[in-house]
Image 1 (cartoon, rainbow, N blue to C red):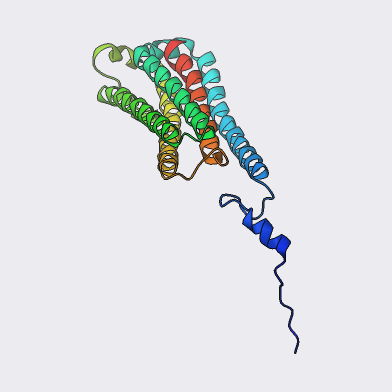
Image 2 (cartoon, rainbow, N blue to C red):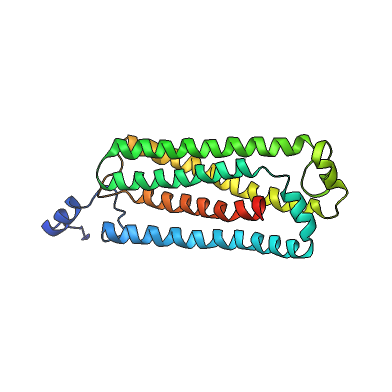
Length: 232
């Protein structure tokens, strides 16, 4: 009984020899793989924009209905801490952009240290947010039906109807944003480890770039959250 066997050709051997380790076999080139990964990330980012857009619409509607309550509640937020966190995230966007730049230049260690700097700045953001939240909890400022403000200038909130709606929106929006920061920190830490191990170069830095795209979105969302919640 005859059987068919695949015969390796010189052309196939040559093609396999020139196949980079990072290139998946269902892509014909590194450029195609990069474009596909970038397109996938942009589609994901669009869904994230839609998610936060719904919350921004909710904020706008409730603020239009209860402007006095939102103004009084917003005044209890520390705009200095919010401003510091804004500068921290802007700095982290700069360092993640530098990591991409140095990866393109084959400077592995500079790319690594800029990713570590991004991770550290993200940690600073979360620490500040932790102190902001716990300060509210100590005075009974909780979301939804747990809203029971007391102590100091928080006493006035109890007498103003609908201030609890502001803090429900505040905790939901900043909480979901904070979750995105934590997820980003996990991904950046993993990418930094791979960078240190030499997994990326000027020929292949796609994971660093698409992680940078995600982190820039996290930064941009906060740039909208800060003035709406702390300043307006």
